[in-house]
Image (cartoon, rainbow, N blue to C red; front, side, top):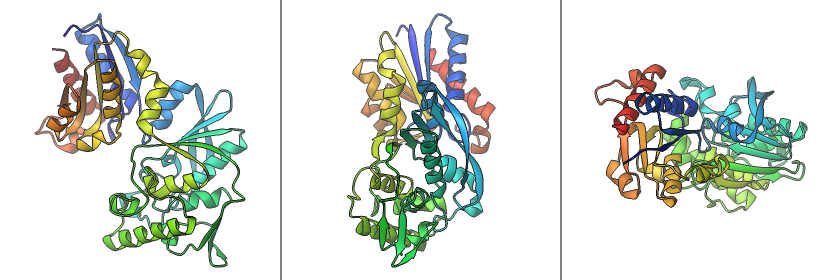
Length: 365
């Protein structure tokens, strides 16, 4: 294959390389091997970590800070972006309620809350933003968005008792929710999962364990999400309603529109436009397996490239289900980490960048 133009469209390699660092490492490898190749570098995301940074590049936005509460209701500083025209805020729920904000021993979705997410949205409203774009990956919460709603002014009630700062444990107690005091907002949610609110594929049963929940707590949280759906009478089967511990559902209660994150960001990045004249697309993230085909960024990039008859190779720190992924349309899937390398060593930033550069050099050869 003659290579004239290569597109690098990466998500982050979580825990080691940001999307931008991955693009830079791959670009360096190409320049060292083939100086005449045109390189289009696109650091992307799919609604999780790095979403704000990815969108900020394409939307001409600046970072701002605000005081919020973290998942355990401790004061902290959170950052998000505001477009230069002041009309649009771009944020990640993880900036205020992410798992990354808690130590291993602090993780407990019965106690965590999305209250800080509501505070962040409210701050953007006060700054004059008419539109909110929010990525909802990486949550430490399973409160169905109750905390976020409360911060925005909603009344969350157990009988006549108002629950001012609700958390996951309050889901089963809720008997009514009053939304008439919530400000009107134009919110576009971008997420990397399409799970329903509750049940076998729901927020609690699929994701709560990684947030610190015990098997008994998972049952309680799933039951609480069922109660929330009964109280609100909004379709709990809508794809993405179970994202971020049900935050997707809470946002839909106030009129938010949910889109697959990879689809939204690829559209904003102009990836389709860059395909003209491209010889190869290289995409990747930290781990790739059969779940990648369920809306993750590398799959969305591959489908976009396929529409233009451009082959796509994916690289990742860890690879599973390679044959299934190739059958789905990838030209090849390459694991950048040597099989005998300990995970802790492979996750180090310099080591990950070096492994990625070597993998790219192998592809070019």
